[in-house]
Length: 261
Image (tube, rainbow, N blue to C red):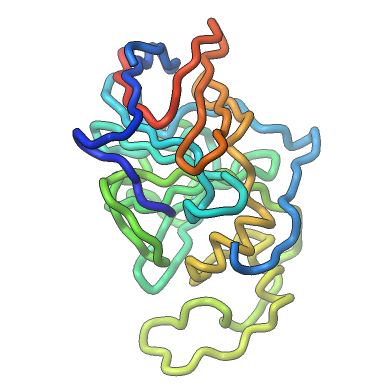
């Protein structure tokens, strides 16, 4: 949900990378208190996951950062593929999260994992749709349905886990008022938290999603394997490395890469 800090010819600390058959090859070079992050049990270990884009194109990747690009769990990384098409990295169930400015996409995967796709435009999937890995989701963009900022079309890719919890009805509040609503009903905090826990993020404000919700359910990109690479967070926002597990080649982030099938 953060802006893509580097774009075009002004990219800072960029590295030139190559992606071959899904692997990168190095070339030249929170304001609100919240629960502790949810740690998945061994039964919900991070699944084998591809990149959220197709092979055969140049891609820019920003470094690892928190959902708001400021502080908190670093559960986000930005991708900007040349064809601008965002794809599901793993099979799952689509959920469209509605805000007053439009929709954004999440996908729930086996084992309680969720991936998020913010800033997308021309969304091609529907709420409740079952998708397979590689299915097109939409286009990279600068959409801000729930708030935030963006410069340079990209997808803000995020990792989450959700605990099992029964669905519960609750009145809207501590969320954005729907268009035309002059007064939003007061929101019960416990009801709000229950809905967030089961993944209902409709009208959840940008401030709440990137603070309380991210602190409770965001999962760090650090240590995760995506597309045959292990990602390691750096000390700063938009920082880190990617290590190709097959040959231990190390790439500094942020950076560009060109993939070849």
